[in-house]
Length: 254
Length: 254
Ligand SMILES: [Fe+2]
Ligand SMILES: [Fe+2]
Image 1 (tube, each protein chain N blue to C red):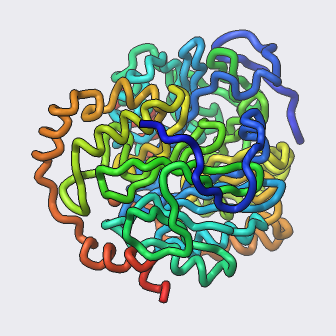
Image 2: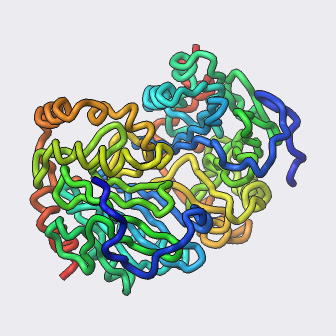
Image 3: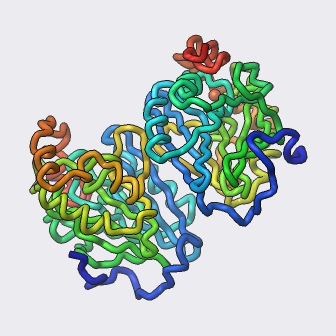
């Protein structure tokens, strides 16, 4: 089920060495405490091209300040999916950091400057993120994989010892199970996985750990579906505000 | 003011190659949201020897669970100093992970299995942490520097764009200023600095960034002292419980 890399390439040419690896990569994980969302800043220390993954409206000023302090050029603010629990920061960031373009999957149905899909690459300097379609939490969920496969940003498809819920926004347990097993668990065991959320103060996991320890995704597909269909979770507090806002890239993006 | 490395060496012999660097290093940063404390897990992936820095009582079970899941042997649970804002997890961890020894500076006046001071090394597998005395927030504050100087754990001596307060627990602005400038700002510019706390969702900074951007420590010593003496901060809520408990390694450590 692995589709060949790259129908589309954002931001430049491919063909850097996989061995270039982490040399010169700036990486920051940041936390928004109300929705427990992680925002990721990645940049090429040489070219200063930078990308933000899953910025949150409430912390957009913090993120923009850091980008300026580090002398970076924010080229893309990308969401892993159309979030239901917080309003994206992409709209605000486009105002704070002129030139920054918002990115989301075509399948999300949300507005953005750039729509991407399975196999597309988002380039920043000598690095790039490959978009892998990992639907099941929502139709438009993408996992972003760093070119050397040392890191992947899984959004809500895979959380640390958990996964995103499948009971709204086109959620489907069987689809999510297939996505994680075919697109994430096929990455190298050592690949570090960075989720969109964690509610226990943990920040990162690995493919090896989740293949061995994830209490849901180590089960069979049928058992997984049964678990997911019986979670009986409350409706997210912010969903009626967040989803309509995120469908147009944050309420500030008018 | 840099003292020659290592009067004492905990856990084994010195002499690994600085170039061994990050190969095989397991590293996890974890967050405790009530006191906004960061706990750090470091381990040698080959020998499984592990160390925790600044564990918190409330999250000790989470930390112990991860240690077991990763198949690690927790040899040391070390504090950067005698904290005033939370109860240390070292006492609980010693019960959860038999064989684990608590570590703190001699100058802290706190109980622990092992007391260390400037220049001592805490070894775990082929890695070690060098203890640097960085008093000023408290008398016993240590900064732990990884052997290849790529990472340092600054406790409350240096925070991201800030520093620990100096208005209780033997606090002294002039001492803190000297500590940061002589023991932390002399590390390589690229050295990643991991604090004991952050209240803005940021997780790491670098020597270069703090030398250039820290709003307090880029000032003169006199200006720094003036800033610190006029913060008028409220008394920490937990201080009357936390300090007596931490002086005996967490209330569970009887
Ligand atoms: Fe979501
Ligand atoms: Fe402190």
